[in-house]
Amino acid sequence: MTRDELVAVLEKKRMTEIIELIEDAEQGELEELELVESLGLLMDQELNKEVLSLLESLGVTIIYLSGDEEDEEEENDDEDDDN
Image 1 (cartoon, one colour):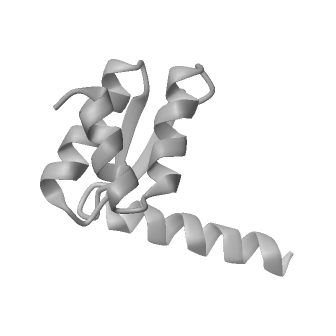
Image 2 (cartoon, one colour):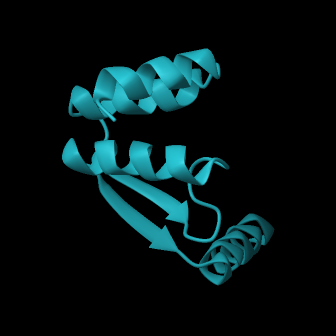
Image 3 (cartoon, one colour):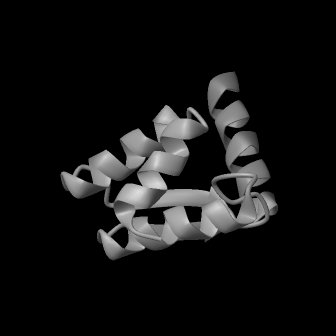
């Protein structure tokens, strides 16, 4: 799927935030994207794969986190808030 075809699908589905991510990547404003690997970026797995592939081709580094790492970060944030 080309970039334009992908954006057209995203527009049809009203996924403006994902389109903004792509535009940020194109402008060099997005270097890394952290995702929980089990969740991905989008619920539609094929669309998720296409978007992540496009982002990577634009130079974005995808950093996959396990759900455990997310929980640990939240716990650390909570501890920081207590101090």
